[in-house]
Amino acid sequence: MLLVIYIFCLVFLSYLAGSISFAVIVSKLMLLPSPYSYGSENPGATNVLRTGNKLAAFFTLLGDMAKGFLAVKFLPVCILSDAALLVHAPVATGLALIGVLLGHVFPIFHSFKGGKGVATAAGGLLALNLAVGFSVLSTWLIVSFVFRYSSLAAICASLVAPFFVFWLTQQLELTYLVSVASVILLLRHKGNIVNLLNGTESKIGSKGN
Image (cartoon, rainbow, N blue to C red; front, side, top):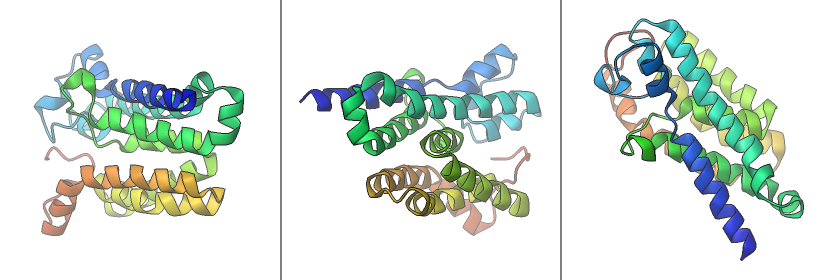
């Protein structure tokens, strides 16, 4: 029963951390319009980039990655006992990843209207395992560089993430949980998938949706 309470606290606190929107915070600090008011109306680095302010987009990206990394890296250690963490570390870190991702996608501080979760998931994967994180990030960078579609890069990275987790960690529980996170990301990109198929998806740096 105590373990269930620990896990609930872990997921809930991860969710609260994920609900902090750095797109909104950075935009306010740098006197930019709300990310909900232009472009895709998505509070994320790609949309902030549409303002033309690359520094704001960078800080948004950095903040979203940092909250994913910190939630996955430190919350399980802070909340679970040493013995519980030793036994349940893959499950705990995987649940922290899902919690912080859900917070970003459905933030309680912003009427549950959040971003796509790519940067937050990337930070979380780096915390889970550096090799996994860098492999997924490399996939995103290669696809985005070649095709210039942030959404396509995110979709491809989401698809390969569970395979990298299993290949590099050999942990089934963690693979299952990362698969859940990948499904969340793919569902958040369903509109982008339609746009890609229709040839109407905006490329990186464009002013469109």
